[in-house]
Amino acid sequence: MWMTDLKTKKYGVISLGCDKNRVDSEKLLAIIRDNGCRICNDIGQAEVLVVNTCAFLNSARKEAIETVIDCASYKQNGKLEKLVVTGCLPQRYVAETFPALTEADVFLGINDYDRFFDALQQAYDGQRVNFVGCGNNSCATDRVITTPCHYAYLKIADGCNNFCTYCLIPKIRGRYVSYPQEQLIKEAENLGDIAELILVAQDVTRYGEDLYGKRSLVPLIRKLTALENIGSVRLLYCYPDAIDDELIAEICDNPKVIKYIDIPLQHSEDRILKLMNRKGSRAGYLSLIAKLKEQVPGIAVRSTFISGFPGETEEEYEALCTFLDEAGLANCGFFAYSREPDTAAYKMKGQIAQSVKNRRVKNLYRVQSDVSRAFLNGFAGKTVKVLCDGIDYDNGCFVGRAYFQAPDIDGKVYFNCHDAVQGRYYDVLITHSGDYDLYGRTPDYTEE
Image (cartoon, rainbow, N blue to C red):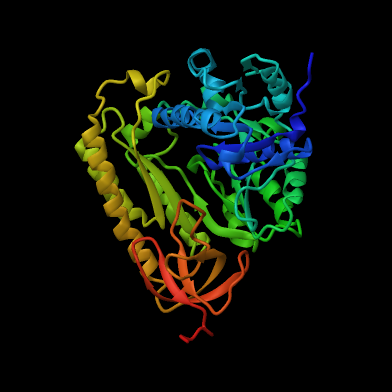
């Protein structure tokens, strides 16, 4: 049988969904690179194109399917020879998508990247290939970074044991699996010089429970911050019931840990939290936020909330608005509840009309914008340390982030400077603020 020389092909990857998915895509890119293959950024030039999909919500599944169909057009109008679908969509729905998405030639799940070239070779032999569940790629440590070179994500675990009633993650990604510390340290070392390392998982705070019999996030943080190539560490997705005194002290005392924490609260009202199978309460959340602010001066607390959950009354929605004022969070994301088949909440009574959900989410953003604006106004006239992310050509200035701003999900700092280098920190005098962004200049900057 004639063997196709896969090393002569040009490869492209489209990564959909969250930053955890991005890390998976970066590991696949490393496998492609290490096989001696060429990676191109222009998908129109790719001969093999990979779409790494998300399937968390119906909207994400729709986007994934539409992206695959759109990419298939490059078989007629470009150089594309083979189209590969990977990630959450085939992992959970391969029985439906493999026979239906005939535009795609290869299907791989979340842990099948080590079989990528085996599957691709079969596709070049004339077969449509379903390799979902055939691989074991969970221990890969090499990556091709797709973020700006000065920051990167480190996925420390996969799956989830929380079983929130609205969430499909345990059925897509399985139960919580921590990656060994040795693997993560090697992966972090391989990233090179990184100004900001962002730790992610479905639930960062439960790291190590399955591997070491106890929560081990703090020991991991200490080992990562001891690395010379890691400038700082940021924490995302810390579940509130697992934020203990040890972690709070580490955030406070470790100079390499950014004084920022993302806590997905999802709601404020006790009855809704119970229906969601969330382990928390309004009083407990407010107490935790107050404790964080007291013990870590200046800490920025970010969160996400779901509105329109089945049975959410107008009074409970109004109480969530009041909670935002009381909590004083630096920033928040809000989402309308998405009714997902195969979740416990799908069958709950009291499903809410989409128009009502949209109205509530829109108003929650309005409430939080007032809170965030007040937080940002406090920096006017002060000098803040800003990590330069690059140039904003539309505004004719540099753009970066302060400690209270994570990439993509929070605001930015737009600043004037005679010369700034991506990945370096600058002292920026804040002149004014908007709803989510700050504006300023370096102290030595003068208009020419």
